[in-house]
Image 1 (cartoon, helix red, strand yellow):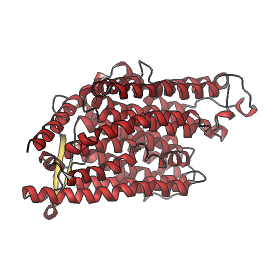
Image 2 (cartoon, helix red, strand yellow):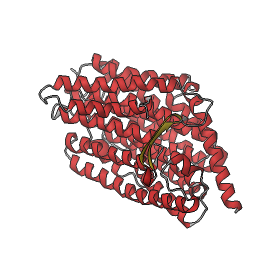
Image 3 (cartoon, helix red, strand yellow):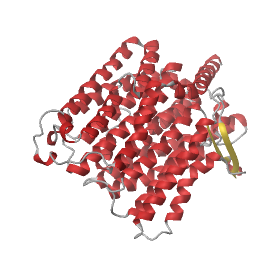
Image 4 (cartoon, one colour):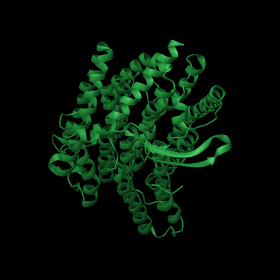
Length: 502
């Protein structure tokens, strides 16, 4: 097998991590610059994936295959379609931003930190490009270990508690998913005579409805629901966000949470169509509860970081709502909202980290009147807040609008309830912004704060460009996914109808 572009994008960070292991730990500048160059190069190499992607095709593109363990039906099979393309690009964009945000914040065990983050990037990209169930599970688990160390080693005062809680929650779902993968492997082999973990091959098989499909769906769904996180599996998230360093929070919100929603799209819907349709109303209901609950809890948070963390529960509830509408508008809106949430919430965590570096506090009550002191920071913060609110012209509006269009086609009452989440988002985000930015400077410590530095501008400008680009010209992104989304909907509906006709 010749090494293709997708393999290079996936493994370049890990290769860089191996090289940096040879660098003495005292050479911190070399380690930081080397890791940053590797992540920027990975993003640059991922751009041709977008440019050369044929939006008219629903099939996987940039496909690479190599025999790995042929006796077990395991192969190295990677590729992307319109569903995974933007998530790969989001990952390669967010990682160098997160790494650069830790330039001054992480001054202990720098070598271990940059190596861990590079390995994490390979795991994240690998999850999105894997077309083999065994390979997917390897990347899924490999991604867990670096994030555990990022929280547990470089986190806050309760970092060990948060890291262990994160791992325990994720492992419970992962172990059950592994059992379901093996059950799917043997059931497919018994029905077709071909034992394989190859996802496109297994996805073409029409699994008969019944208890086995239901149980496998529930096992996969639990693993993905914890990762989203869906209500009521969300309780690990605030602790992980609050205790993680800024770079960890940006990666967690920007990319890792999307792996749960991506899992529902890539695995649950096509592999278990009957169970997906049967459990659709329950997921719909839990999603709306998550939208409203996350917004209400965010409103009463005194800590900036915890407020942004709980807002993810609300925003990801919208994504899950869109996925289970099984409409073209709902699914396209959900995928776009995954990207938008990664940008807007990632920006919010970056900005909270910047103000924390200056004041060493995240409590809303400790701020006020910042516009008069740091106007550039306040203006950028305003754009990130309005993006998260869903202001027309910015990225958050497009995805939420399409999701609600799809939801109203399924259940108007529940869709109307979901719409209240947008109102509540405006309440908690704008109220928070008003208390932090406007008013009088009541604390002497806030009077001499420095405004955004050139390094911080370099972090924020790429994210701001994408926030405006998606809001003003979303077709550049939605056009890439429409063919794949329509093919997925047709696949689910046709497999479900065939199964029910037996």
